[in-house]
Image 1: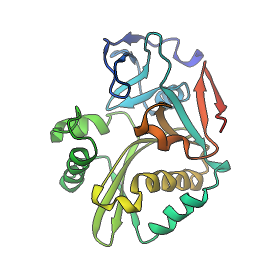
Image 2: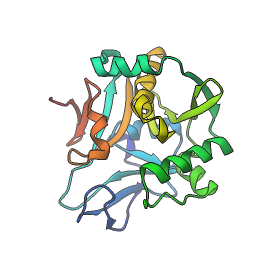
Image 3: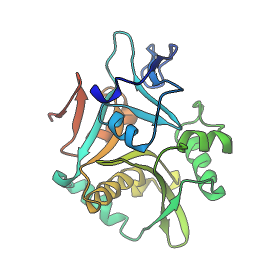
Image 4: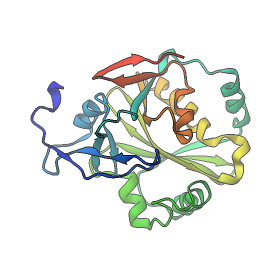
Length: 236
């Protein structure tokens, strides 16, 4: 990993894994005094790193490599029959790009989404400050994309712009519109947006094969996985 040799990494403490029961989790973080900007982060994303707020990290668990970074080569992507149905189902939505800033309507939707989809989770009682600390970074190039049904915001996708692609940071949506598959549609829209920018990749973050919450991430074909320091196409 030549581009990160000058950097300092810090090994975080062990904690309960949020995705696999009876497992502990650990991450390595870019050191607090390491240089960071969108250019450097783009290189780190190419080596399986991710951000949460301003923190740049990668899972580093003892005796477990279940978390696998995924990215979609968007120029080769072709939607499946079900994905085409999802696109058609949401063809009445408009998408508006917003600055990465606090918006009370976004936050209200975010809170409603968490309480419905992730009850009892560590983020459920997030404050406005927690919300921004999770989704924004002082150095990133980020946008909040509103998906609107007429004048109503039904979903928001937070996206980072990288040198070679986009990174899907987080998407939240109205859980009462489950039939629209808004989370899946947001990814399909981001794929097309990445294509339109003539970029190569949509980075999806981490996927765990045995975690149902992440099952959607490998449904976009083709998809590449970062394993043993290399990106390769996933089989199946």
